[in-house]
Image (cartoon, rainbow, N blue to C red):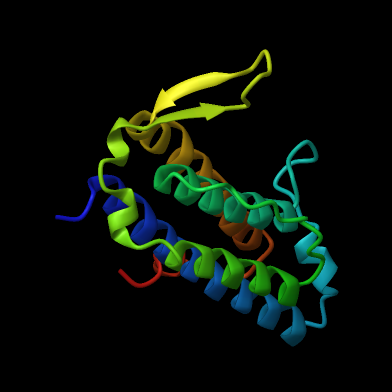
Length: 169
């Protein structure tokens, strides 16, 4: 039987990252068709104190690698977050998807009993069970940044809807 944490994480994040990739393609096409500088979308924000689109995609990708690695009992890789273009973001999403695909379902067996420690050795250290980490921290964070990326593009006129956000399931 496949681990419930695998089922609740890897396929879900794969679906959402693939959908995000398609949304970014539509955004790039939108900019090209309307002669809009791609940076106008890449640096767009919902509000001045929020991160721009580029950073939202980077953080969503970071959460996908962190969640999958921690639940699988693997080291979380460090990625530099230097993306500045739609092509860079597509490459980042492809790298995140490849990372997710690198974990066999069996690596998540009995992961429910793992303890996940966030910010170890700092005053903000927090210890969670793997289940609590996934359901109450990891996935909500991941979805927040995917949703915000979608909302930034929709707010800026990219013709996308709920079907685009959800992707294929």
